[in-house]
Image 1 (tube, rainbow, N blue to C red):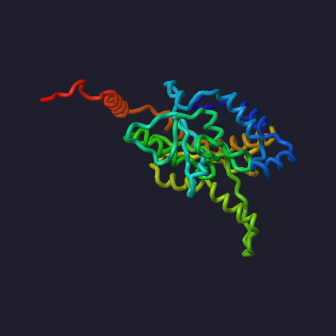
Image 2: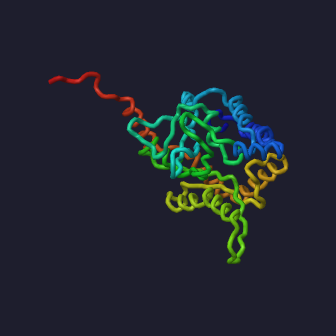
Image 3: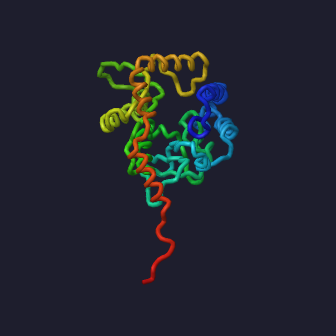
Length: 292
């Protein structure tokens, strides 16, 4: 919504609330039957139809025709190519000839397909079949895709230093553990494995230590209540907004510093370097080859 369609934030919020109420509605009995049949509580077809209606039939790469459109990607997890699982990047850009990303991906797919594939959370929606691949939610493998984004940037602009990396979390809720040494139940074991596999803070800790000072900023509020992925009630969404606003008030100095870095003007050297690169990219060599 923000990157490709450049929809104002107020409209994004309205659409988010409407989409949540349309998608996450299900009779409990029907949902339980669907879970046993298709491993998905919600109706994946309804979700697909909403995406087609909102996104249209445009391909990801078509958005690159707009000079004001930023580079955008969505990440899914391929679950039918053996182990370990592999990430797949739906891009609205092409990499230069000879440049290969560490991650599989393509720009030929439609925007609604990219969202459908990257949001196929197990238990919520069915896996998404695209060609010969079976896609699930990218969060299964890369729940914090900041490092992936940095890698893609290096592929796109190999000689440009990072000016600012802004990472936005969806909130975190920490549950106090018990200090006992008794054996845990199977349910607790599985919960711990899933929680560890989808943790986002380890990536944050690593990047915070490796990236230059005043380059990397992460905003991820502590939540006083654990809010599930499929929450769509008005009071709970308002609660999320209130928690986010209080967090930003407490981190006002950090927010202002990030805004300052993001809006910093490019230096003359940067502008000259970009101009020289543009000219070099446009130059394909002499129009003829000497036979002498």
